Amino acid sequence: MQADTILVTGGAGFIGSNFILQWLAAETAAVINLDKLTYAGNPANLANVASDRRYRFLQGDICDREFIAELLITHRPRAIVHFAAESHVDRSIHGPDDFIRTNLNGTFSLLEESRAYWSGLSGAAHDQFRFLHVSTDEVYGSLGANDPAFTENTRYAPNSPYSASKAGSDHLVRAYFHTYGLPVLTTNCSNNYGPFQFPEKLIPLVILHAISGKPIPIYGDGQNVRDWLYVADHCEAIRTVLSKGRTGETYNIGGRNELKNLDVVRTICSTLDELRPNDPVVPHQNLIKFVTDRPGHDRRYAMDASKIESELGWKPRETFETGIRKTVQWYLEHEAWVQSVTSGSYRQWMAKQYSL
Ligand code: NAD
Ligand code: DAU
Image (cartoon, rainbow, N blue to C red):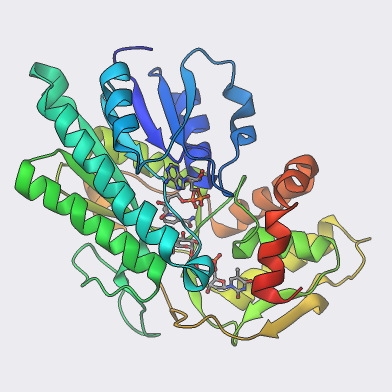
């Protein structure tokens, strides 16, 4: 591996795999992907780079300190980009244990071993090392209809076990900067969508249910608002923060694409009406079914991304209209991938969550 190798955790998941694919296409440095391969991790996402000499996959757990310590000493990364997490809010409601273990204890383990590794570096390797922590807008809680968007100074108010575990990990990262001087960067991003998203999340779930004539479950009244960002734009933002961000700072990332869930679902349905006129149920929106609301369901998220835009010059490339069309097309063209992730444990999850 090269001297300027980066370590990515959780690189077999949705955003991590998009990040690695984009990184290897745009940058010269090598990548080590450390992933436990939970239900959400899929090495097939990285099939296109499996034979790239700059790419290496290591299966492991971020909670395993001995493993992390050895990995850092052996591969000597110049940066860590930390995606690994339990990421699904509904699963955190059914069983928070894994969220506390990975998101809190795992981030703590990674920070401790990074601190030990970084302390042993000298010269440029020490000065240029970065720990970039990938976090979420959900740490800020829920907005009212007329509230201004979240800024980096908004008070933390997490409402689900998932967002509380992410908030805790953000605080640990902050503390390692202030206490030990570890050169950290934190990004808080809004809802992502795009290729390789596991179909427990709203957008891929709606696409797959719509094309197979299954009910499309909408929680509550469908008026909850999310700020959608195409995943490639998030990955570019992370690369920008890694190269230009100021250590100790946090950067909000969002698409300025606030949409009600019902409108997201209707857009997907009308795109499919056009692309798949012969599906079992057309118009696809006849499949919409309002179901029991998510407990503690946050009403609205919106990100003020002015800081990353003005300080670092990042801007999203996709609008929701262009991004959602690409995403729908991707799922239609990747039937084998869909089959591979919707067997076994996925069906058990669907039965538990939706009584399907
Ligand atoms: P994901 O669930 O698709 O992927 C998570 C990955 O982490 C999987 O590959 C999984 O195998 C791995 N992992 C889980 N536990 C691990 C452990 N203990 N050790 C090593 N690897 C482990 O998640 P995602 O949607 O790609 O999200 C990635 C990160 O981005 C998370 O930190 C999430 O909080 C954050 N985020 C996600 C979104 C979004 O909309 N999806 C938005 C903002 C921030
Ligand atoms: O905001 C960033 C967060 O976005 C990330 O930190 C999380 O990791 C990611 O999972 C996502 O969280 P959400 O809870 O917002 O995403 P999800 O796709 O689960 O749900 C989006 C909205 O759609 C939310 O208001 C709940 C609703 N929903 C979701 C599902 C799965 C439904 O109405 N029906 C569903 O079946």
